[in-house]
Length: 373
Image (cartoon, rainbow, N blue to C red):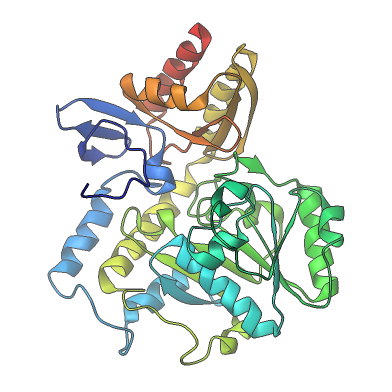
């Protein structure tokens, strides 16, 4: 057995991709409504990102963080402007680990409050912050984590004590079932955190990089987090993660407190910089596509197999009353790539750059499939 059996791999091998179309080893085309689990936000193999990668590959692939790396400063400025200081890692889980560590270092407190059905990664502290029993199964969890009920401010209040360093959450729970936060809940949560001098960490690994129609989901809710994390779509397929914190928190992550051999390497930074440039243009024209997306999704609400449709921007969850894993498998056979999430939910994360025609055609095919079930 060459590989561990920790993934259930579908019986297809993809060899090429362009925007929202993937091609398998038999030269068959598929319509992608997954973005590689929220990674190809500006479309697979975007030519501007590819060009930046190729150009950088001609010069330097890797340089350790023992030396200056101006590309990191460029990407940091594009991500957080003058308000935030950035640390680069290699994944969303690593970025969340850094956020947890920073919150504890900056406050001198230990407890992190997160939420049931959340997902923050599979490394140990990120896994402990994840409020899902299935992720914890079979292993002892790290202490210092408490779980409130999402969209329930009273459940947060019951967990408050003098040792709470931060409250950590996704503004749309992705893996947990595409469950958006309610504005009133967020307003109360932010006010409560400020009153109690508790840091707010927003996990933007899946919701960031334009996925909800804005660069980061917190922009929809009218506040600035103390700390937020980014990954997945940040370099459009090249592994990278980032943890950003308000400038006044930066001294807590002092020399020797954290690090990464590959974090912020030149290839990843070149791809991230190009992706952020492309994203700025994409977001200028995304509103009409989002409106069309949700007009088509409204039609799903009438299907007998559909219990609920919810989401934000180009991030949708369709809760079914038939087994979602069967639906994902059958749609793949029909050459449409989709995802599952949470409690029997079909998850759609189409590239922001998918054409309206391809998006419409794909959604129609999914609707007709569900109508026949």
